[in-house]
Length: 224
Image (tube, rainbow, N blue to C red; front, side, top):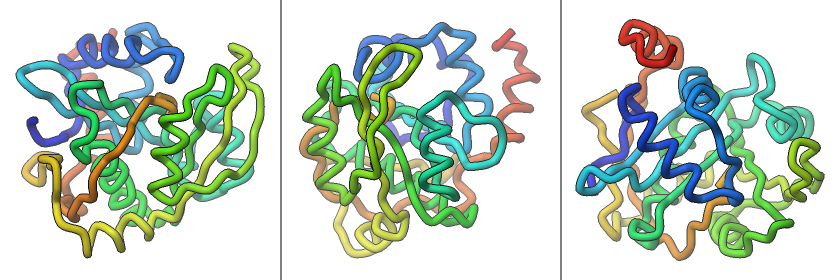
């Protein structure tokens, strides 16, 4: 498994295919929709194995326009939270600590931006019990429920202090091969069972700021 690292424009089609394979746990997207999310994200990470996309995370801060009704709900009920729009770990990569590592990376980024909490949603109907159990093991608590007016899904909104990930990362050994690249800068309802603990491997300077990534994407001209 290669280290998780920021998403590159040329990787978007493969990551879109990964995302859409996991619908309805995460909402299916078109390439322009996916590109717009990646361009504006607070954190956009992907992990690869044998040139196959295995995991992705897209998260947003509280500033700027809401990225749909679920983001709007989190902003209203958990102001100041970093919102996980989607986290996906493909079947062959599950159980290696990658989902937990991605959340740890987001906690690092959130702390650097002064955001104290992580928020997400997980499907209740259609049900996603694996993701609910995964998030419960990480310490997420239920904040509320609602029906997504776009597709009729019933979702549970979850929140967790970012500091909880930083504490556990500082004291837990790396297990299962999950790594984060420090040399480069599901909604959360994807199925993510049984991840082992991780260690803290991400420096604050690892991830390019959203505006820097957006400029890079525009320069490459690959998202038109």
